[in-house]
Length: 250
Length: 87
Image 1: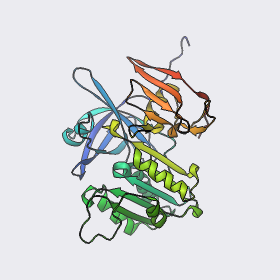
Image 2 (image 1 turned 45 degrees about the vertical axis):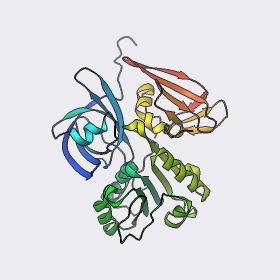
Image 3 (image 1 turned 60 degrees about the vertical axis):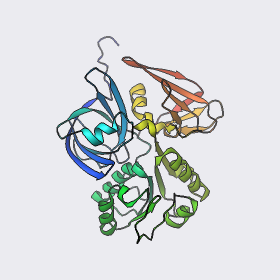
Image 4 (image 1 turned 90 degrees about the vertical axis):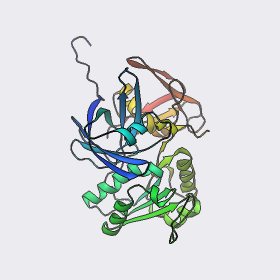
């Protein structure tokens, strides 16, 4: 290797916070400007590394919520009580703050507009985030794959991107959104009010016969319940893509 | 398996650091049970001193990655082969 420059293919880049969006009382989106960012695909994530003045470092992964847009990316972060990184990102960070990121990461839990198959998206809590990148990419490009999103949240107030999803479902041909509210429901609520189960998937998801591509993202227990039920309903395992997040993500 | 595990997506960045390329869509075979899975589908425990990657079919330890100052140590368990494709 003498005389050969060893090129690192994944390097830490500097991200600057350029905007902050309060999504819910516990969830905030951060718009980041990342110098040297080379673009990404819907579904991919970044690693964030924070360094304390004493040199202590903490690293976490966050899904990107937006389609590729030059050097600009948006992440959406849910507060994890007792977490090391999310309290800073949700409660403390300000415009102009900088930290390190690397990415894009992931080649499996990825979808791009124009693949043709119906797209079945199933998200639990902030598991909506990478799925939203797919929905936004589809809306931006204007392709016509039918998309159904089944979203599980505790209450209306906990529904991330609620108003945007409502508008997209009206405007974007072929996007259907079903939400289930597991803990509290408004008085006029007519949708489901329990955790996602096989019966709910049977009633609201694309049938297996249409061979949809399924993307499932959420806490580990949620993902495993949903993936098992989809297989029970006849969906091909290789057309069910899963991504789990959990308490170590705080 | 407990609710503390994640999956191979969560170590995508570390795998990229180790192998120098995207690995979550790469396939690997567990030599203990013969199952072939993508790395994204491996069961991952991140609360150990390192990241322990287990076969989702039989639970065998496929691979362990331990971060060290300035680097990472990778040990291989039941991983009998992996297949990497472009695109």
